[in-house]
Image 1 (cartoon, rainbow, N blue to C red):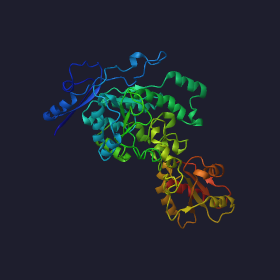
Image 2 (tube, one colour):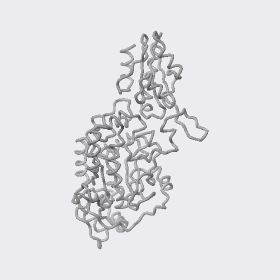
Image 3 (cartoon, one colour):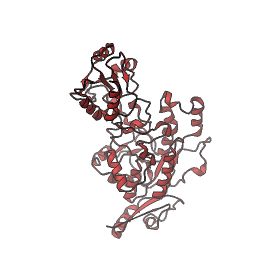
Image 4 (cartoon, one colour):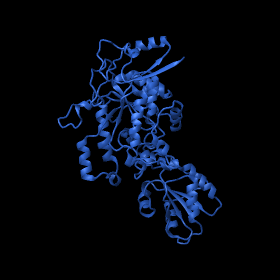
Length: 471
């Protein structure tokens, strides 16, 4: 069947005829239409569309404050509520099971069909542009919003403009409260997050604006994937009742969260983007994968996990800004804290399997490491990785480290590992220069102190160069 695609800044005639003509449409509302040339298909689609309103409502649905710094003209035009109201009692766990093996396109279509104008796509300017392409392919009207923190890369702002022109849409931007930003910067400076963590800045610039945005919706669509962060996103369903934020009706269960690409791997997302000739952020070609604010994002190096480019100065288990903090469950504390070797506690808490399991890698105990520290004239050098089994960045370099150990077998260099998490973490920080996981140390043949590998390149060639230069 031949397909014809059109994108318009207003409701096209072919679409507007499908809706209830008795309702006034606001000027400037933005929709993307996807029109099959098969007229019988259009007629059946028209019947389904006729039951939905299409007026765009404001994302920021909170009552206007007297001290608001957002000009009234900058706010989206408000409109009457849609006639269909989603019941909170709906079993979304059951729906998630039903859609577990569905394609992202099918999941996106179901989300837009079910919530109509009360759902919007959260767009960050990274590879989640795939969500917008999937929404276009459904042929249904859709909305897109984004959080402008005021500290994004110039390339990201240019990308926003490209996406708007490509799809004929207007992204609904949410901004942080100027008074809150001013108070934070005046009291703590522009880069306080490098010293005391990113959570406070993210709360002001991202979480609170998102909270305001979601108060004007009944559902939202995110680009979360299970492979993005094994420590916090490994169990996200394709649809769920949002455990953290509230929707327009207020209270627990008033907001539904859709994750259409939850089960899709990163390389498949990129295959889709290339196949559909979708525009992408130019930062991707410079080594950026996960893209956030400019001061907190950098390119990913060989052997690194994609999320390691975010907040790189912090521990791996802090790689969430707060937008998806509901991913971290109390029942999974063992997973996040990384204690264990694959067994289970008596209380039933599952523990993370160990990594770097290979015959060529020696599993060192605390006593073994202490002995290495005491030896001032070693008979042979040792290469040791300080790791935590739960750490996604340790997991990402497992293959290269095992390969390195195999290459060093028989050369006189011993390769070991030391689980420096849990009870051993304080010891590793004080005695082994542990800053974050993974930390790689070389115990030279004729030196009392280990030498810390300074680079974040964890591919085999880089690690081998480090060993060869010092052994």
